[in-house]
Image (tube, rainbow, N blue to C red; front, side):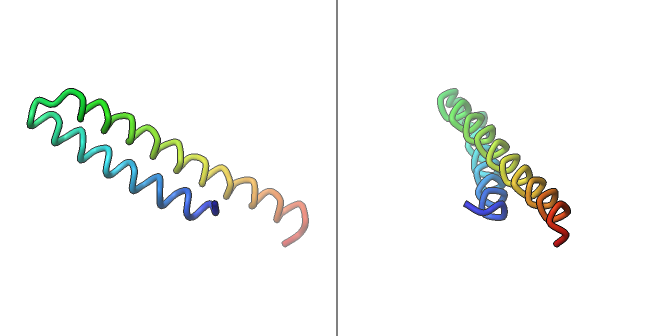
Length: 66
């Protein structure tokens, strides 16, 4: 997966997780809240992986003179 794809999927998962958490809070559904939190964390991890890929690419470009 490209860094951009990782970052976009991460942002989407974070947003979906936040929505699930909110709906879970409003409805009193603890399971949905927990699922939302897990999805949010997954999204943050995906986004971080994408940012790390960008960092590695930038370093590699500097080394190779691109």
